[in-house]
Amino acid sequence: EVIRRALELGVTLLDTADMYGPFTNEELVGEALADRRDSAVLATKGGLVVDDPVSGSIHRDGRPEHIRSAFEASLVRLRTDRVDLYQLHRIDPAVPVEETWGTMAEFVTDGRAGALGLSEPTLDELKRAHAVHPVSSVQSELSLWTREQLAEVLPWCESNEVAFIPFSPLGRGFLTGKLAADSFDDDDFRTDFPRFSAEAMDANQRIVDAVTEIAAGRGVTPGQIALAWVLAQGEMVIPIPGTRRISYLEENAASAL
Image (cartoon, rainbow, N blue to C red; front, side, top):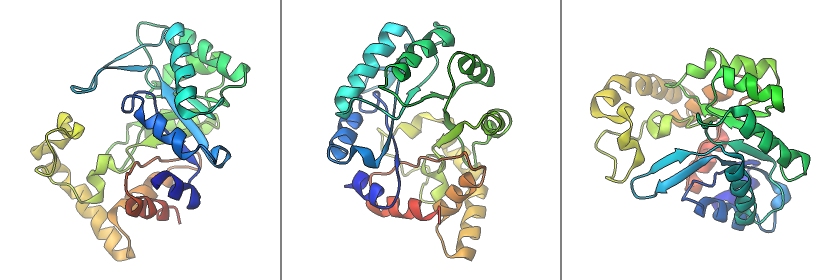
């Protein structure tokens, strides 16, 4: 219902990955798009392997044979013969990026992928991949409290007309002003991030306070201000806030107005 409501609101980019679940999110997206595939720009990712869903342990695998099998499995789960954007979830340090990227380029050549993207690359890795096959998108974290990509990667994207897709544009929920250090369940993945320790959250509260004050003056929510800031970083910037609730989806979508 959330995915279909997103399409109704004019949200067209749907981003998933084989490791989400693992696998179950692609299946969900495939079910939601079963009778409306052409309504969405469908993006997925491969290259990360979940070793243990309980502990969350993962490893990178950029070997050509893995990328090929991962891509083909994603198509099956997504109930489609083509994705609009296929992304390397993380670069495998044991495999030259040129080798992985060259394999992915085959998917574009055979018509099963419309374009290719990288997630969390360095500027050097971006340039190396781009020399093999055009990079169409870069997906990395960007928000009011995560701005490292503004220094080099985003300017490179702008210069090369490459889309920049920020994940966690709401600071993993922190910038909505609705989180406290004691509000996490034991199985919440954010408890593993130093930034979500009580001390760090207290120190960063001034960011939320400033966003909340601006939002109050404009009659909107802090989350909408945070998303509007990300959108304002450039025409090539396409944030992908995640939510399971229609109410938050509608709130997020309104930040673009």
